[in-house]
Image (cartoon, rainbow, N blue to C red):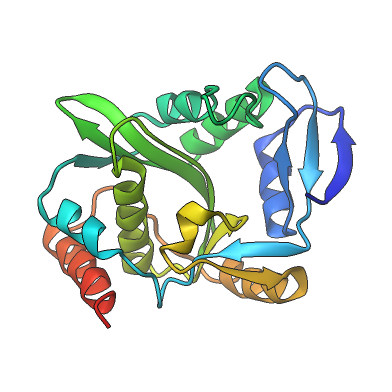
Length: 225
């Protein structure tokens, strides 16, 4: 992980948006750490929207409508759950300063959550930052099998529908490889980033359901190729 040092200043929404536009983002060492550091990866994870792959098993889950998928109804709860420690993750990079700032970004329309609900219980989801026609995926969680994966597919459907050009995953993980994530040098990423933020995407919180279903089917049909 490539850092640009720590920052003792209070995070602000304006500072965070400027950082994303420059290709860097904040993280913390642990939940109660009062400080952040800035991350500037030499290699960047990107999920190409035009070649996004939906695994066959996941397509069946989506078509069964196992989850009630909602957008921006529980942003702060999604962040709080993403910040919880788990057996696989003893510390989180989401400290209180980051969470408070991103919640403010949410109220200003720059941060969004995609949530999976079951029996009115929040069981999975993700959140990220929207800037121009770029979306920066931050973190996701699952309390039911496939919940975060379904949220990701629904995120991509909304990004495609809203004219987005870039889905930044920051890093490449095994979880994301199944969807076709690619890793690119920072110089190539910055070219794509500059182009994306020069356009304006529309993050659809209340899309036309028929249109969204058609895009979901297109994404899943394309995965058969």
